[in-house]
Length: 168
Image (cartoon, rainbow, N blue to C red; front, side, top):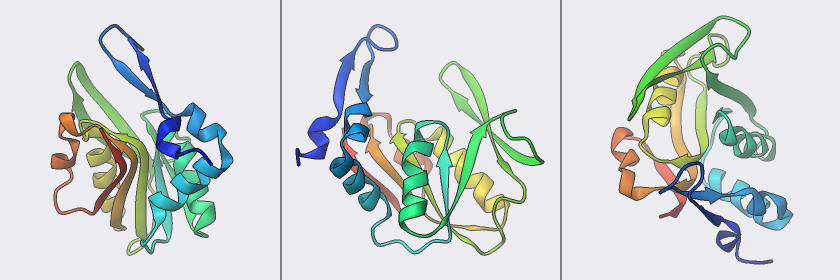
């Protein structure tokens, strides 16, 4: 198998000039590499549910849940979930955004692993941690495929176990 990190390709000037986009689709297309990433995201943690953050986080979180015999819970952008929700807003450099979780998605005391593809500024992850805690569930850890360390997102997740398989 090819080293899975080498399967993350750089796409310059996407989605706009000056951005170097990290494309994980070649990694996802390689079954051995994808399996290694799924295993790495969950290794060493005990949890009842995996919360995946929209949208690429779903791609990683769902197989982690299946692999570990845990439930999967989506955190989505505002207005995308059909039942009663809790919401959390966070600031972006150009405005704000809101994510939601179903109010009945997690039970008090459940152990939760939060999974996403990239830790950038940490806003979405911090909002998701807030949502999980408001349900009464416990955040065991926050696990990412990749961390963009120059954006200091880890600082928005104090006192949490934060795992990144790759740091750029």
